[in-house]
Image 1: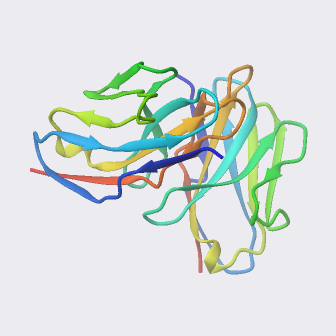
Image 2: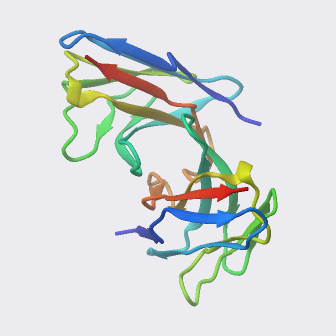
Amino acid sequence: GAVVSQHPSRVICKSGTSVKIECRSLDFQATTMFWYRQFPKQSLMLMATSNEGSKATYEQGVEKDKFLINHASLTLSTLTVTSAHPEDSSFYICSAQASGRPSDTQYFGPGTRLTVL
Amino acid sequence: GNSVTQMEGPVTLSEEAFLTINCTYTATGYPSLFWYVQYPGEGLQLLLKATKADDKGSNKGFEATYRKETTSFHLEKGSVQVSDSAVYFCALGSGNTPLVFGKGTRLSVIA
């Protein structure tokens, strides 16, 4: 089946630093990737939709200058949390939509747990 | 807009008990419906799906039937195991819009 990887799986950083999270589709091409944030014991909150070769579409309330998304190829999207602060600590999950398939065909990565000290 | 409502947890059951997690939805058009499962510390895994009315999705002993008349997609399993302990998310997909998730239901199965 389709596999999506995320790297790193866990990251701990100091306040004020930037952290980059990679999301890769390993065996298929993904024109669209989605980034979600999940707080403890809560549901997934869609942050942005990332389309290969174009600017990401951010959901209302998500700061695009703080959460930089780059979808440079059909198999890779990155999320950079700039100047991270403790309130950015969360579980970040990406998903990839296989090219040519409807949006209900999404494959999820295993998630990245970010802890900002 | 589209939305999903699922029963709040946590749900605690003894091993071999019957499980039902309710899910209802509001949508325009003809959405696809999903159940995802999240084990502790992991991402989401697709458990089952149904793409049209009266379809039944099934996997690993779990099943759910797409009921258009009641706008529901309840998840059931006849006999749960400790290994089924996880958070279950009902979700809806329509056209090219992102998936819409319910708030999740935490299931704990005790031996």
